[in-house]
Image 1 (cartoon, rainbow, N blue to C red):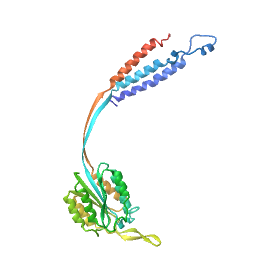
Image 2: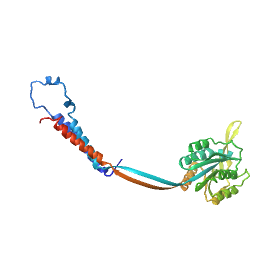
Image 3: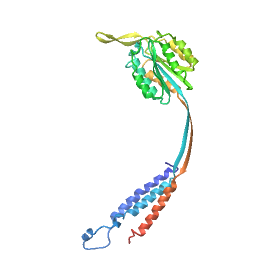
Length: 327
């Protein structure tokens, strides 16, 4: 319910002094009949008029309320909204090799990547998103889907050691392209995250990039890891020990992949920069939305005006008949 003149609703505040004045007058009213004692009157049965004594004032307040609402012109709306969207399909290609356990990102690169990707997925409820993981081999963890609850559960289940170790960047990218190439979406995107150089697999990264370009797939590449050295956990007979290992990322190849496919290259050196990268990609790949909206308003004041008039007439009738009293 909308009001065309909502400012008139302030007139309802008039009820406050009205009610206050009415209560004040009730306390000030005294009987003009002087008798030696009023005790006998207390034992007299109360008639129905006693209980209806305040009805006149209540009807007057209700009538005023409905009258003010009618003046404010309540309106109902009939509207429809049509949307046309340019769908975006996104495949996440995530490196789960052993080097992703390095702890230059907290708690480690893999868990940080999973955490940021989860937020990215949650912020895009209308897109088809899938997940491919790779190390020495590659497999599809989740095909394109809009059931993001399932996707996030499968993403959280990803861990190191489920496949042979290594870094098959070309295979991970080619697998993602294969999963998205037949999509009917107008925009097809792959987000490739890795922390190393291609050292496994039968498909070279640039060959996979050529395939992506052929199918109109845009690839955003993210190199994750600090420059220089990074702490890496090693299992020893004495428990976990940390050793700084060199960070070796083939940035040149990742830059070429992004450039060939019309995407962008990013370098994430900590959790904050990784989150900012996904935020930037999120802004660049927003779904285009065109909306046509139609609204029709109908005046609804007449029932309130009719109710106010009926209450006023009813008040006048009972005040001069059933509840009539002498001055």
